[in-house]
Length: 187
Image (tube, rainbow, N blue to C red; front, side, top):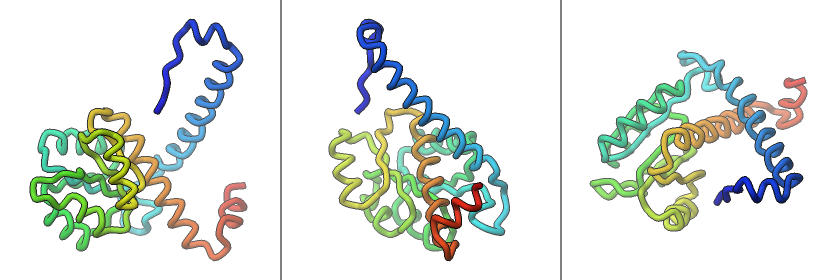
């Protein structure tokens, strides 16, 4: 949970404020660097590394699903939407996706079954209380959880993190030399 710093608190502890700001800026620079690498994605099927990441959004709330699709598409992702757990499971078995964004509570009651049916990086979304959502995330081994009220920028950020992590995993699996090969390739 983030805590906001008031102006009077920042002025009372300027060194702490500067350190926090520098840490945050470094984190944004690192993320921006990763996203620039991600911006090299293009639409092709030659390798998972060089194509636009495919995201499957599963939500029975048509308004939220449409907003999530539009938001993620504007962020550069190839987005598909399913409204039921049965359709989502069928789609996951027949098409390749990079990330699953799934509502916990679906009309057919299969939200958690969809999450358990795949090994994809998964973002759980819900209007549940964040403590309950985090407990569900841990039980299903989903990588992230997001309250639907957090807005479009939080959704984009969470999905980008999962895509970047998936690409890192794929690269480490492809390389017979592991982390050393990635370090040498970057220099």
